[in-house]
Length: 214
Image (tube, rainbow, N blue to C red; front, side, top):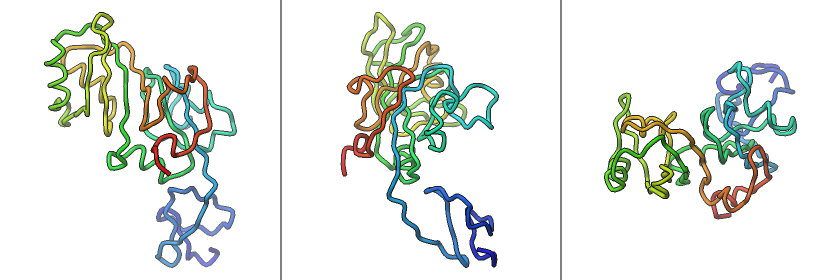
């Protein structure tokens, strides 16, 4: 390292104490360096509304790391929920796991329960529009599935395979409806309704709790 042969994410490093995360790209003499770290940690967190999903240095508001214990401060988050939204968030130091959770190619669906100010269109029409895709800001926003679960309470459950920034709020707004509550209750096989976690709680899990396979 002292000879400048090692780089992390394209930056030359010379300090042997430099910390390497699982998702970092480490090279020696321009070639990938292979290393193994089998002791990863995985947590489910029931994010309350009002917290940013971000590192504290990036926002002046309160973030999830202000609410989490110091022992979890080094974990990264898989995907995001906007400040007003609540529900399931996954935390880990396993870069491959985070990539699988966040990228559509990972095949892990995200399930949301959404309440809007008023359902202003028939159920069949809403489902058709969500599945066909809604154009917003140059992006085609698609839902994997959509179901009106309680029309009297203006509540819809939506399944996404990926997730653009504030996607569900944008989709409903494009149809003239404002989201008043957005709750992510499931990622892959891990379902908050079944686990019974309270808002603000965290729980150690295994990757298989989410992926459903070893």
